[in-house]
Length: 218
Image 1 (cartoon, rainbow, N blue to C red):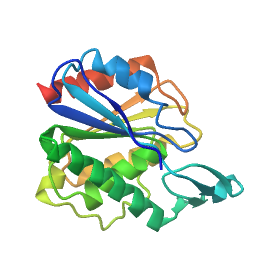
Image 2 (image 1 turned 120 degrees about the vertical axis):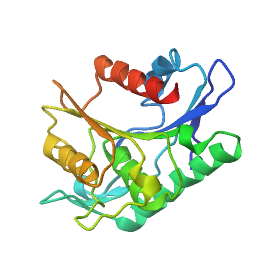
Image 3 (image 1 turned 135 degrees about the horizontal axis):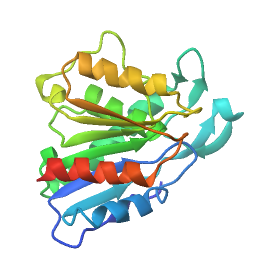
């Protein structure tokens, strides 16, 4: 398995963003984004893990970097739950490594695009039991959230920034909005931002993310 790509800041790190790429991409996909954000966030380390290469059913069983198998697209995504759990445990191990290295978990953020965002949602609100700085959910959805979702007091205090393209034909905007609505109904402090784009990332979006992170890191 590939090691995570780690981007060290100019100054001594006291915060960290763990950023998961989308289906079929790799750990280098968000390296330019991390580099751009680090120009403002001078003490923030970025950790970019690599998904394992495995068969994806909806893509004809073709093997590609994926955090979990997608078995069917409708009505909601049907996924391989064991692979989702394995990916969540990897993220938890990354959080714990940063914590054990001296970074306060309240200054550790989880970010994910598309499938990576689904893993981030699952990790933050169903598996990780400690504080986090926040969650960045880019063009994503929450296949493991249910109407019976309950949060601990600590989980309900994790802020969320949900960002989505108005013309996204891969992860429909409604799917992203459902995850956001589920969390806000449970008292989570969440923000929703739309952009005139498809299933992608815009410079304006990265700028907004930088502002959001800077506000939380003080």
